[in-house]
Amino acid sequence: MRTQVAIIGAGPAGLLLGQLLHKSGIDNVILERQTADYVLGRVRAGVIEQVTRDLLDQAGVGARMHKDGLVHDGVQICVDGKRHHLSFKELTGKSVLVYGQTEITRDLMEGRAAAGAKTIYSAHDVALHDFSRSAPRVTYSVDGKSEEIVCDFIAGCDGFHGVSRPSVPAGAIKTYERMYPFGWLGILSDTPPVSEELIYVRHPRGFALCSMRSHTRSRYYIQCSLDDHIDAWPDQRFWDEIRPRLDEQAQADLITGPSIEKSIAPLRSFVAEPLRFGQLFLAGDAAHIVPPTGAKGLNLAASDVQYLWRALVEHYADKSDAGLAHYSDRALARVWKAERFSWWMTTTLHRMSDNPFDHQLQLAELDYLFRSKAAATAFAENYVGLPY
Ligand code: RFL
Ligand code: PHB
Image (cartoon, rainbow, N blue to C red):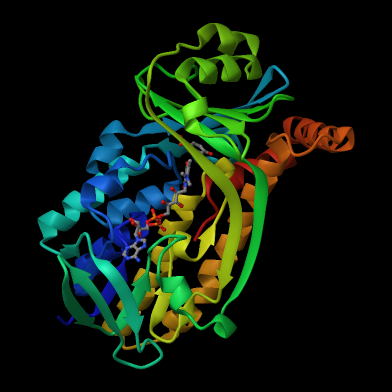
């Protein structure tokens, strides 16, 4: 098979790139290791920046997002039982949209099917070849049959555990990493959210987050130990642990119910650079990971895709490779700012250590955030998303 761009991975990065390229008349094929149902079953991101929303519109898949997405003009931060409100609208004139990654993925999959673009699910043994030359190849197998795609470019959108990044010779790539000594235990439940806005909670028992997917579906997270296992967390134990971390009003308003999904995620900061190796381009979680505290992972995947899409259009339509040459630098400049913000939110809101000095620093940082308009504006600018 021959295509212009072979895309590895049908997560948000791969599907969005595929849709934007298709709209621009650039032929592409997506190879995905899992089935479509498996990809749709992963419960992940919930907060969409305005620039991500605009990009989904450009991809022609924004209709349901505009109908069902919840516009959030601000966020609440609860520190040791006292809630503070930060208004994005007042501080930046912008807002974010609460709309689940599952729904975005579904919209992109449906858009791709309607466009008649090719996605190969359950593709095994995907391997990247000759990407330092002008005609790279991707080999894979489906139902035990070996196949090959010859292309102009490969987009590595296959997430942190994918095959694209490890295909790069070790000497050509530099990585930066920080692991955090805790995870997030998350549950989804068909109960009304405790508050109209998200509540990020800093508490001596550990971090908590009250989020949502709709007016009737809630998403809650608590900081947990890396040794924890979901079997040790029946629903009642989860509710009994999150409740005391909340302020009195939220404790009274919290409606509990059976979980419909429960999972534990480790927290990691990671950046690989550069993002280009000959004709191979990395985008999204394949290239970088942020801890979920700043809600930046999916949004960063979208911003990489925006730079890569524009660069590929320049290549094919304008016969200019300037965008491709600058892709890595442009994307990484935005990535590092989101890495900083996600690290800052994580270290400011989680129980990081037993050292009282660290606790006092967190409290000083948060007190400054609530009292200084400059600090609050800097927070809001980062949370709603920096411009492309
Ligand atoms: P994905 O979504 O991991 O998709 C990669 C796809 O590649 C496939 N794949 C392969 N395919 C073929 N061959 C191989 N060898 C392959 N290896 C892997 C995989 O099956 C998969 O389908 O990466 P992508 O597209 O870069 O998207 C990144 C986002 O999914 C991720 O950054 C976000 O989910 C992070 N995240 C959040 N981001 C936000 O912007 N806002 C949030 O509120 C937010 N909350 C979260 C999050 C992530 C979380 N977890 C579980 C890590 C909350 C959580 C709890
Ligand atoms: C979510 O709703 O899943 C969510 C919201 C905000 C975050 C992380 C996750 O920072």
